[in-house]
Image (tube, rainbow, N blue to C red; front, side, top):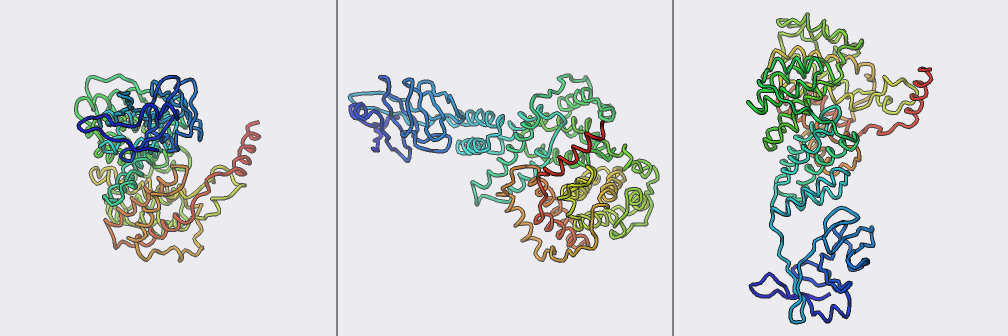
Amino acid sequence: MSTATALSSSPWVDAISSSELAEKGKMVVKLDGKQILLWRSGGETYACNNRCPHEGYPLAEGTMSDGCVLTCNWHNWKFDLETGETLIGGDVLRLYPLREEAGRILLDLTDPPAEEIRDKSISGLADAFREHDYERMAREIVRFEEAGGNPVDVLNHAFAWAAERYEFGMTHAQAGAPDWLALRDRLGSRRAAERLIPVLEIVGHLSWDALMQPGRYPFTQDVVDDFDADALEDAIEREDEASAVALTRAALRDVGPQALRAPLERASLRHYQNFGHTPIYLEKTYELLGLLAPETAPALLLPLVRTLCMGAREDLIPEFKSYAPALDVWKSDGDQVPDGDSFRGKGVRKCLDMIARSGGRIDALYDELLYAAADAMLHFNADYRVHTDKPIQQNVDWLDFTHAATHLNASRKICQGRPELWPNALLQTGCFLGRNAAFVDWDQDISEWRVEDPEGFFEEVFEGLLDHGEPLYIYPVHTLKLATALKEEIARSPDAKWVPVALAAMNRYVHEPAKKKHMRRTMKQARKFVQAQG
């Protein structure tokens, strides 16, 4: 390896003598920390970065074929040094202009304009996104930042790529994004590399969910003449996505996303639906709207509208059929607030009856319900994580218990500005409590899960999420959402009686993770199902 010399007041660098390269065929020269591979092949001379853009192995140990095709022998990536095209592989190999003058080979090592580098990294990120190439997504995000870009800006592109790839609307990838960005903000400026992890996790999750639903599911391009909030809510109730999207587009064109918030909030809490995801999804979408570029609004709101149109409405099934009657008898002046412990072992109907009598004391009822939700989660019967001989209706795990708390947290934020929705939100919590009552063990010893240092505990949880090691995005994003919600609730009411119970529940959840794959259970249940069909 030789060291090149820069020529004064010139972009050209004296790299090596032409005769030496002709004699050796290939050489690596070094300048300012860059290793440049020069290769004489087929009468032509080529210059490229010696580090393969895949994993950095030296291309000088590669093979040249067809005159200008360089193969990295570690993973068989192939690069056309004539055109700069990557023939096999992903990332683009950096080529350098060269000229021969007075028996010397001169190189131009001038970096391309920063904007050009950022554009190429976004293009590369799009390719990696389509294949869920996690490592390449990481490299392209780093390249974008190194070229002076704000890495959060890549999310504007990622959400646009994802929007029409979700058949059933938005996923936890979008719902978890603002919490990942909040975690990024907590890191401050002390760890540059780690501050990119939340961005990568968002892009990776969006990519994974898109890959799981191959194909495109475009939204109508129709736009109505005038936005009508009542018409939007009615279209969602009728599951008329085309009309709902046309109305949404009109609002975005004429008045902005905030005009959509009221009808979407009403729609999100109108039913106990989609296992309580819809108010969480709505609240997190609006948080995200405040963090990303305004032009990203359609890519965030249209999948939300699709979710509201397509979400399963569980209050219409037998298990939750008492929800609508409970709404009808809600006592807005009721003051019979039940103690959180009184929900133990109660089914859906009884929980709803107790809640409906307490509408005159919303704050007190909210705290008791948060206590009851945390209490049930803390006492989850973990045997249900691993059973193999029960019906599919009893396939219950930790994620089923996290939703009550995160649903309450999101609903509180909505109902503070829209108090008429409190009956819906709190009765829906009763649906969670009554449904989960069958899957708890009140007699187990839970003393070991007590948290003595809440701040230290949350710090440990958030730090762990930066290197969680979980290949399935759905699990860490639930941990993040739950930790974020509980931390917000504790900040609001640090001395509430539910605080130590919620901390203990979170502690147990973190240390008794879900079983991620059920081979024996799945096959047994599939066999019984098929046989029952006849």
